[in-house]
Length: 348
Image 1: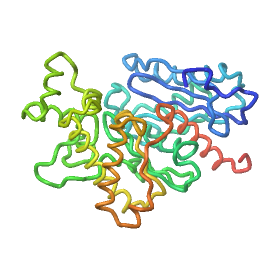
Image 2: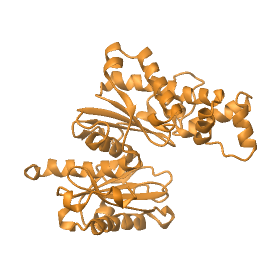
Image 3: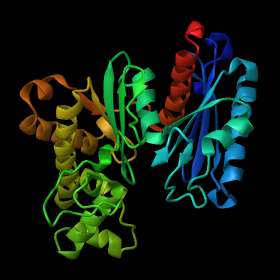
Image 4: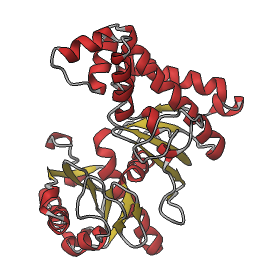
């Protein structure tokens, strides 16, 4: 939503307005949406995590005022803001438990500090959960009663939305779909969390790169080996490009990721029976509009067809998410809206 031409003119917007903040390792994204989820202003800036948690929280809070000013909306017309951050978190207490790429954030109350600097109450969420809520509110899951979203990127995130409720769990650890076990074998690949056999160990960007390195080392991927020897970085994008060009070993790697996703998705369908299952994030190989992405989705569906209960396999759509990089801030704003409506039902 960087292009102002895609912002909804204020005259066409429906009040009240909701701010959504999406904290990433590189960038902070902040959007202001109207009561129908349409973006009226957007702002992004570098996270600058090295400047410490208080500085990051200050700039996130101030960015809420920035988008209000960009839209020409008074702060009094914004009842609440939403904040999505990487986890794991203690959602009730308002802090990230283990911040990983955010040194100094462990145990730091990001929710309350952003609320302080924004001057608004803040709804706190896992970033993948927020993305799923965005898809439920105005995206590919709109008008459906439930959904599961898997975000495929550096890791594998998950979101489970039922009605207007996200499944967070007693310890804020529900919806960690990337950590369901798909391979119980003693030789199972290790997940970055340290445990073996998790879906993330087979279906994330890190795992694809690891599998590609193994294919190169064993002599099974000469084109990949040649590209890397020529100075190209071994990334999912390189695998995607070679697969798109017809390289069979690269295509086999993409197919292998799809197979493991199909196994994991089958478990999720049997456990949750959602109205739709969506795939989002950076590692969707171009999505439906790309031949590799289309084949990737087809392979996932085929695996589910071969493993799931027939009724679930036939009736549960498996598709790509539609909000892309906007899902985090839109979903955070939507979750703020939902919480406000729960707390103030007469305002709904």
